[in-house]
Length: 158
Image (cartoon, rainbow, N blue to C red; front, side, top):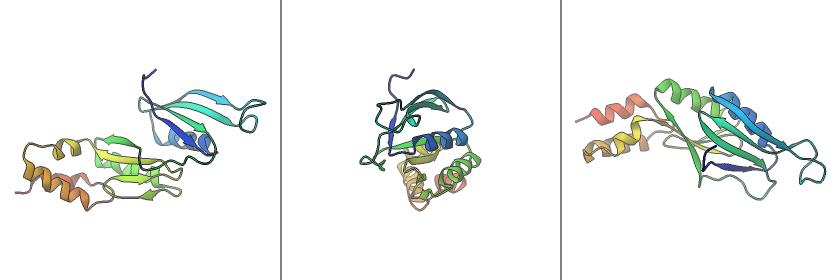
């Protein structure tokens, strides 16, 4: 068990969100599920809380009720090794009502914010060559979904 892991509060669709995330991430599994019993805060048999693992990251989802919606103050980052991975996660997480935001950020249909990021981006943004890092930043700021070839071209420009 991880010492620290995200705990996400959903109104009443945590089970739907859980099943969706399990379908998006190939390396995923349910760790544990607790359902409402008689006297619990929700309808008997419905999901109360569940822990899942997505690509090695444990995440807990809870049906906590209204009043605490997910916000962009927290997001989950997916580190992608290829444009194919960027495209796959971007397309899957925006399907069914997700929203594209900017600079590799999106909000899925459940209100959870994600950053779909090529692994080379943080390296290029922190490059000792500040002109190179600046070109990469400027290229990224013009994008919605990140494009590795365009980012690399900006890094390589003189």
